[in-house]
Image (cartoon, rainbow, N blue to C red; front, side, top):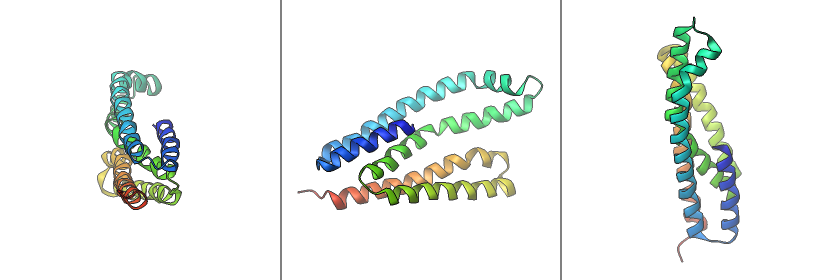
Length: 159
């Protein structure tokens, strides 16, 4: 997902320099399409083999740990599209030369994980731990979408 995001950053930088609005917009949507296809395939493959792999690592006598690991893997992999889209939008900001906005997104993601982790420890329990990353990805994605739309319209007004 990060590699597709890095490719989008380069693509966006080139088309930003060329002032090609339509290619900039299509780059975002095509990147999202690639991430969605990858996420669905990864979700299927990971979930087909998750119990086998977690059992290989944890052993047959750790049934409750395997069940918890399987639950965590299912939840995280279900939210792969959110993470993939975050990589597209964050790297679009990078490609357009707005690294500070991308850094703020990363810091926000870290803070979101920290808050979710504290809540998981104090009230939500294991399920809170499972959702800490997806919640952080979602909040950061929302911020990045808003910033991409704002920067796009500010820097590339319709003529």
